[in-house]
Every structure is written in structure tokens, then in C-alpha cells.
Image 1 (tube, helix red, strand yellow):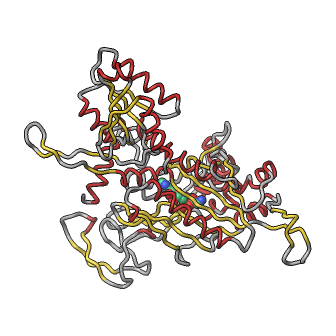
Image 2: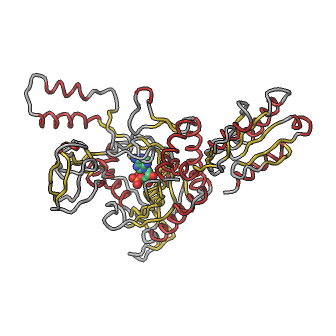
Image 3: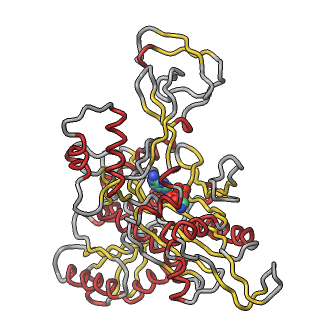
Length: 505
Ligand code: GAP
């Protein structure tokens, strides 16, 4: 299938079958904001609970937290987000588009390009010279651009019963001031009560490092994990839920003794790549890419991205950064609270004496739960073999080949007809699945063929059909999504077939 068609298909299936809707759609939608529907919330939660299982429950060395989204403003001062978490923005003087300089198409500085006036498709064309920046407008190709301005990506709001605008208006009442002075005053007043929506979940793990380490008497190497919402006022929102302003992250900070960070990075890059491969169909679409020296964030001494080949090409799925001791040291400096670790058994390499106090180094696998949800939808989307319909027309049907642990429903149970005790038995089977903690769905609408197709489209791995014989011999037909094979099994056996399949990852 054409890759762009794949993206269109996934977006349309997401809406039609209740995975993802545009936020506030009836009011025209809110750009870059999305709502996860009944099927989407199950898929996203399954992605997140699989991450939590492998990162927290299945490991002795990692614990979890759930911190507040709004944190003390000094956290963001210390982490560098207030001063430096920004995108370089540029305005095109030709077509008035505002865009990110670092993502703009490149051109040779000093070369000449031909653009149409005002960015219109038809009309006068002009020759313009590419400036020092070496890039042009992504919409009209013009190099006639404004200076770059830094735009902070954090969402600012106020905490408490304060109205900064009231204070500004009082301060300005009856005065005549320049626009620049007004801007400065507004900024000062807003800053007094300002708080920010977190742009990453990571900082809480650094800020709570000492509390968590002491409360659980953790020994290095150990990790603190968190999943939850993050917010960034992204300038470029793109590719459906790939990059949005409100999204969910799954991050873990792994604290290690200085000098062992390379080994830990090796471990985590393999571990995280393999986590995706366990659930994916097409393993050739994943790779690890090391960051070049220019790409490295100021706090990192090495970094790898797990990349996926999306319909628009290879792009980031998760970052695994070696963050040195930067964050703990910064927070320690700014809060004046020591954020160190003491190993009484270890010899201090500098003094040669027993007892070694150090600031741990950190390896951080940082994944996006909403981005991973899109990736799993793209990976799972397929068509079944085309078949002729009643009018002889060849038709192909959509099938989501999701890993059963990720599938919204694990099993659908159908009564063949809506009488003779079949609905009652089917509902009883659904209850048995619920008791076993397995999400099952009762479905009696339309023909059996249509019901199979409906569940193939949302990735339900098994369908059970209750018929007249089921009432006599406690058997049902079990149909597997990917092979479409059907088998007759005892009802208890159906439960164990599904359970077994869910255990194998
Ligand atoms: N603590 C490090 C950190 O936040 P990041 O590379 O900015 O690193 C980590 O983000 C992951 O979060 C990304 O790999 C991506 O999966 C996800 N992510 C970041 N920004 C996003 C956005 N605007 N929309 C959706 N997912 C995003």
C-alpha cells in the first residue's frame, strides 16, 4: 500500500471505529488536540500498562511514581526549561507563514531562488537571495524572512486566586507607556503567580530522588519511572497524534555510579528496542540511531533514538539519553538540598577510604505513549485477501493485526441468533472472561460475517460464537483473527486458549 494512503486509512479508521477523534470537533476542532475514543483509550492504556509491566513490575531495580503536572516554578528554572526550552521561530515576509527555522528546507546561502509574490500560486515571480541562515520558507520557498525569535514551548498559567491582568491594568491605569514597557510590566506581573504545565515527566524523578531513595532504601543502580501527560506549545504540530500539544510520556530515570553509564546505556538501548519488537509485526521498520555531537542536548554525553519508519520516513519514537549528573547537580545547587548517594561498602576512588558519596549519573529512556499508539496502529493496519461481494465486485477488508496484549478487546462473544438461550449463554461467557481480568465484548448486531469483519477492523484477536449445539454440549466456535481458522472447543478451553495467547509476548 502507498505509505500516504496508509496514514489516511489509519486516520479514517481511527475516527470511524472510535480510536481517535479531533478534539471539540463539533466546534470546528482544536488544532493538534485529540480525544481518545472507546477503542483508543483501551489501546493507549494497554500500551502504557505493557510499558509499566516491563519497566516496573517485572524489575526489582525500578519503582514508579505519579507526580503532579504542575510543579514549583524553580524546577523549570533549575532544569533550564524556562530559559532554554524554545524553538527558533521565523516569519516569512512573502507569504506571512510562521515556522521553525531548524525544520525549514535548506538552501545554499547566497544562491538565488525564484518565488511567487505573496506566496500565491499564480502571479508575479521574483528572484530573491538566500540569507546567511541557509533556509527558506517551507510554504512559498522565499528567503525573505524575519530574524529568528525564541519561543518558549511551556504553557504558562497562574496558581491561586490571582488575576495578573487586573494587576497590570491597575499599574497602567492613567499612564501612557510604550508597547515595550507594557510588555515588560505584563511579563513581570504574570511571572509572580506563574506556574507551568510540565513539558516532560522526567523532572519529578530528579526532584524526588532523595525522598524515593530513602523511603525504599534503594541501592544503585536503580530507576524511577513515571507515565503521564506532558504539554508543549509546539509550533509545528504534525502527522495526526505524532506531535501534539498535549501528549503522554513514559519515562524512566536510571541512576548509576559514575563511570558505569556507558554499560547502562548499552543495556537500555537494546532493552527498549526489543520492547517494541516484541509487539510489532514488521520488525524491519525499527532502528537505533546515535545522535551526532551537534544534536546532543546540553545535559547529555551520548544519546540514541529508537526510530520507526513512518509513512513520511524514519523519525523518532523514543530517545535514550545518557544525561550525566547534570539534573541532580542542578537541582541540588538551586534547592540547596543534597541529591547524592552514599555507598558505605564502596571505596572512594579519590581518598582510597571506605564509604563513597557521589552524584549518580543517569540513563533516561523517554518514550511517547501517544506516539507509540500511532506507531502500533500503523504497524497493525492491513487488508485481508480481496473477495467478490454479492454483486461480483472485489472487496478488501481492513484488519488491525494488533498484538493481542495491545488489542482493545481480547475476545468478542456472539450468539448466532438472538433467541433460544444463546444471548444468555454468550453473556455468561463474557462474564467468565471479565472474572479472569480479560476484556471481552458481547455483540449481537448484524450477521456473523459482519460481526467478524467489525472485530477484525478493531484488532480483536478471537471471536467466539455460541450456537444451538453450545447449549447442549458446552462448546463454542473459536475464530482466530489473523488466520481466520475456526475450531470447535469446550467453553473452558476457549478461556485457556485466549489466556495462553495473552501470556506469550
Ligand atoms: N525527558 C526527555 C524528553 O522529554 P523528548 O525527546 O523531548 O525527551 C521524549 O521526548 C518522547 O516523548 C519522544 O521520543 C516522543 O515519543 C514523545 N514526545 C515528545 N514531544 C511530543 C509531542 N509534542 N507529541 C507527542 N509525543 C511527543
